Length: 210
Image 1 (cartoon, rainbow, N blue to C red):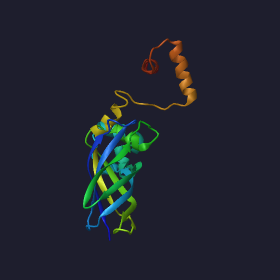
Image 2 (spheres, one colour):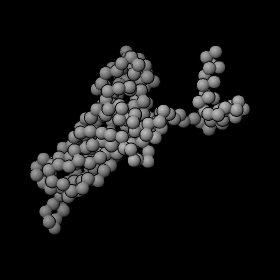
Image 3 (cartoon, one colour):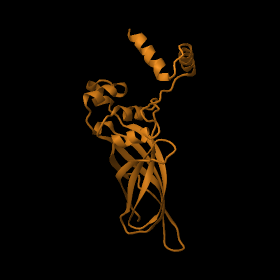
Image 4 (cartoon, rainbow, N blue to C red):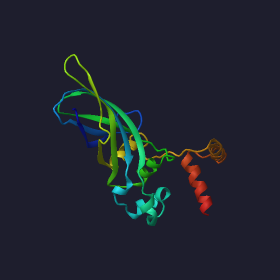
């Protein structure tokens, strides 16, 4: 019976992707010596916040997600990050492939808030696998599902995520506004003859603080 093990061995920002993307370097090992003709792989990627420590600055930034530290025993739950798919070419023994993990500044998604809030160290990921394994001798084809319990953990370095974002949005972040809110901000900027959105928001903040 064919059997696969999975290990995430490295990661890097994809410098050639059209949108912010991290490449997770995945090692796939067939443990019984059976040649694999192809592998249709699906992977669910979660963040497991409970698996790392947080300094005070990070804790303040994560309050929107998890509340005060006193509540973290109940609120530090896994966050869904992505579902990705990958066709793996045939191999015998082991092979390595890149899983493309899309990144975003969509702060309506809890996982993206988390990624933005952490400052250093690693993001504790859990990769859960399923899919279809194609094997068989010449002239035959055998189809076997990936065992449901297959998973691996990986600490994604925070600088890798930040590099992926900075490649597309250097020194910037994105905020989604309702159309009516944007229209008001646009009118304010035009009326005050400001050259940029930062100028408009900074003046509004200053006026509010005063």
